[in-house]
Amino acid sequence: MIEYKSTRGSQNVKSGAQAIIKGIAEDKGLYVPSEFPKLEVSIDELVNCDYRQVAKAVLPQFLTDYTEEELDHCINSAYDEKFEAPEVVPVVKAGNAWITELYHGKTAAFKDMALSILPYLLTTAMKKEKEDNKIVILTATSGDTGKAALEGFADVPNTEIIVFFPDTGVSQVQKQQMVTQEGENTHVFGITGNFDDAQTGVKKIFGNADYAEELAKMGCKLSSANSINIGRLVPQVAYYVWSYVQLVKQGVLKAGEPMNVVVPTGNFGNILAAYYAKQMGIPVNKFICASNENKVLTDFINTGIYDISERFFRVTNSPSMDILISSNLERLLYHLSGNNGDEVKELMASLDQNKKYEVSDKIKEGLKEFYGGFASEAETKEAIGKLYKEDKYLMDTHTAVAYKVYQDYRQETGDETPTVIASTASAYKFAEAVCDAIGLPQFRNGFDAISALYAFTGVTVPKGLRNLDSKTVRHTGVVDKEQLWDAVQGSLK
Ligand SMILES: *Cc1c(COP(=O)(O)O)cnc(C)c1O
Image (cartoon, rainbow, N blue to C red):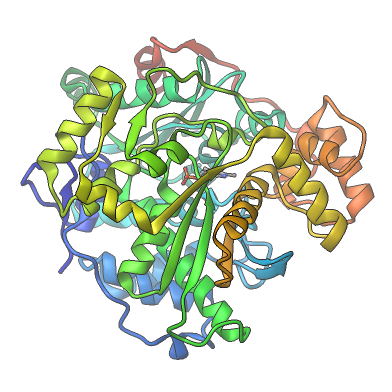
């Protein structure tokens, strides 16, 4: 049986369902599995499976307290026709890599992979735990999580969802996706600050016992749809198993041979899922962690020092990676330290007080499985233009960061291990930058850019982005970054 423990040492263990409902542990740590489960089926057996079947080989291993029927229901409901690609996740060759396209869900970003299943996992958990409070999902977003969480939770009974996004830190398309969200239980606010301000504000609400009491009086309980929730992380493991199986199926690898994984990284959730897949038995040679100009993770992987004291936050054309405090790194530190909660607690306290920490030699040793690199704004655009010109493959800005870092990795190391790049968004979601990158005129308006990009490339526009500009705006609130609690209270009245 797999139980969940806090990364910060509290001995209070939870079942999977309980950890999903709580979101974050009472000592503010993140839930991690007490041990790593192994895949019980062989890769060769998975080769002829569809995406749902692969998910069914992965999720039950982590969520041992859910019944098979419960998980089948969650998986079947999540990964259905709302994904516009019949394979759910196509894995296609482009340039010198294989691209795992994770963006064919409703909101055209990879967050749909986890957030289309999380509401099912959560409502199932509520039934199992006989939870009769209303669950209030509180989410900070750099753009894509918010919309994917809103789509996932809209009108789900006994839930409310409240989303905070940096008012001037998301793309026009991302903002329009969120402020036009339908659903009686949806609440969306811009904040005057950046993503870290939103995330810090939300974490403060989670950590405040008085707020929890006030909410309890209203019959409400907080939970999180951010990647701090273990219910976000576990479904992501499945697509790394899937990617590996596709490489075997396509004859690129024989079962057992290693692959590399490249992930455009923000909060470190996606790349951590790849690490979890390796613990389950998928042979991964290198985890290539790609950052944009907010390159705190690049420096961390190269030095073992996480330092945000002298950094300023940059707004880039890959905004979903504009993050300085990568929450899920805490989970990796825990695993690499040999499950040492006290050590992690100290590191996190140091980050809080001194804005930096340096990890132990043991953790530094573990970090050698990772390669850290970053791409500048210019390099990101250049990568998009080059791959489109050479291979007619259109990628978004986030994927392009990963693609560029992979080229650097290959050059530096000469490593030719077949490599999968996690493609995290449709190019149409960041159409202004993509147009510019492939030599089209520069558009100020995201919707004009979508039309021009379609006219030029003929690549299908995701359903959720068609006619988005003519949708009715339903959410107009903007709140000060210190006033998030007021907005929460107001939403629940
Ligand atoms: C969220 C997001 C990322 C970063 O993923 P993490 O799991 O936070 O590291 C990268 N690209 C896109 C398009 C995203 O939406």
